[in-house]
Amino acid sequence: MKRTLLGICVATSLFSPTLSSGQDKCQSVQGQAQFILIPAPNDPFGRIIGPSSGTLKAAITAIVTGLTQNPNGTIDATSTELWVTSPLDQILFNGQATFTPIAGQPIGTVSDRLRLTVSRGTGEFEGATGAIDVTGTGYNLFGPDAGPGKTYFQVNYTGSICRR
Amino acid sequence: MSMTRLMQASLALALVLGTARPAAVQDFKSWSCTKVQGNITEVVVDQRAAPWDTIGRVVSTSDGDLPSVGTAILFAVFPGSAPGTLEGKAGRWMVLSPSDHIYATDAVVLTPVPNTPDVNDVVTITIRGGAGKYEKATGTIVATGRGFNFFPAPVAGKSYFTFRYSGEVCVP
Image (cartoon, rainbow over all chains, first blue to last red; front, side):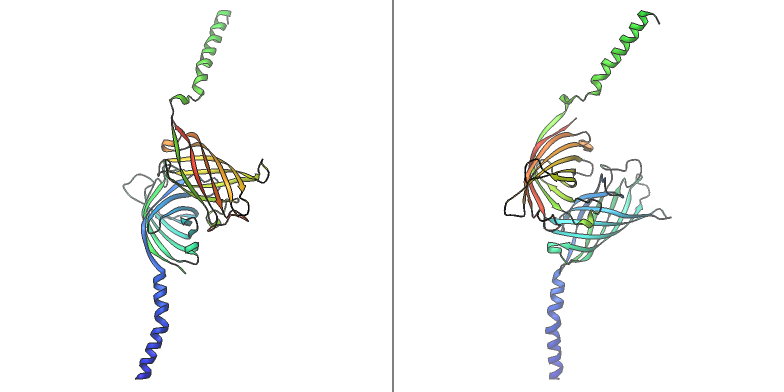
């Protein structure tokens, strides 16, 4: 019986600190952001810029790296997205988005579901992992008014970022 | 064509040209010009977020009279006219809201700060339009500041710039 208790104590002392420190390094994040299309002379599929508020207060820029139009009218996109939270702290994400046209809304209005997976970081985000889910609405993604000054997304984000 | 009709035609042409010419010249007297000032921070971005910007890209934020999120890309860097300096040309996009943007070109002068990896940086920002209320904007802004950890080469996560800016923005 004593051996069993000792074993439990040893196991607890060995594993508890690891679990607890691992949990402490993961942070739930949530907030809002705008993704705003700008002219992009060098980027083949365009570039967005925008601010975010909430847990990750950042200046964001992103490029679309791939676009696929689906038979059902939705559009899938892949992206590389950078969130700069301070001069030294950056999080780079790989993005996978689906844009779904919203019936009854002006042409080019879409719902946006975007999964951002951390690929690397600098400063406090060096070695970070995690992912955030972004949902919201895009305006003038296509159609007669599409273009810089007209095309933008209003989104919410929620997820978890784990620091090393 | 008689001489009279030729003269009439010439006069009409002269009138058309004469009245057309002033319309082609922009009348800036009616434009509204505003003095602006504030601070800009520029952060060198991870190259994976700017794979086609071979010389480099920054993400910027500004406060003051032009609060914005923005970005700029270097088009060219070359030895400056003053010994030891570097000069550059850049494109700049400042987003003040989803509909209001300022687009500009930059003339950059970088002067190494002795015994540091830093540079003093003076950027003359020439506004060349935009979107929304800045669609036809003009003006010039001068940003004066310092680039940190510029040498041996700008690196994401280490290199950034801080500026104080002042100038004038004119809109129709």
